Length: 243
Image 1: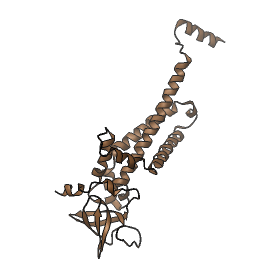
Image 2 (image 1 turned 90 degrees about the horizontal axis):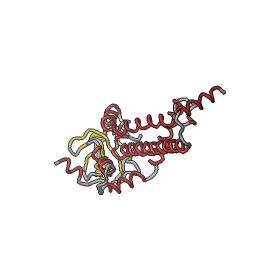
Image 3 (image 1 turned 90 degrees about the vertical axis):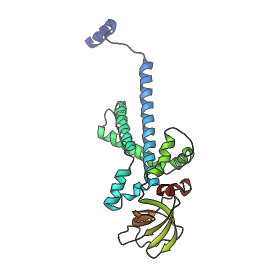
Image 4 (image 1 turned 30 degrees about the vertical axis):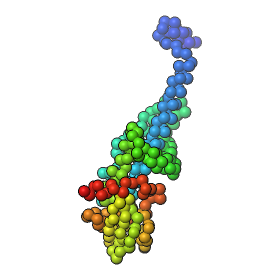
């Protein structure tokens, strides 16, 4: 009873500021909107990072020893990765303000958020969202998105090549790359690939190796991603780099 009287006295004296109910409702709605917006933004950023890994080939070469791992580390989009991690931390702080997370350990809610955004990014990766968005913004001067998607090809190291096999040779095969180059791919005992793999003409592959001019000594060969569209890449890009 004394507590209620004390509260009433503080309200009358102005020590406690009474706020209308709509103030708390609006605050809760803004908090919820912020949480949903950040979740969608993190999901998009992660899906775009995975898209970069696939389209540049960087995500595959980490399987090919220390050389491949170093290529992966050097050419990963670290700015986007740091941004995604930062947003997840901010998201965790916002979610913890919600009443349903008060009694949940921080670790559980944090892991739940990680699983949620990873699943969302994976789900988007199974669609044509990023490839279609890339095709839409490629030749348009759209802020942020245009440079992001046009820069994917420029991120690909010279040691990674996508292409179609046009000839089988005694020591490997001849590849027509997506950049319009004709390259001689040499397969050696150290080349990693599918066990007992027999390469065929018109097969599309990713090649990772040591390049000298138009010859690549392959460290790894694998099938190209099924969603890799060779028609989206500039056939004169590779020639321009060699001039």
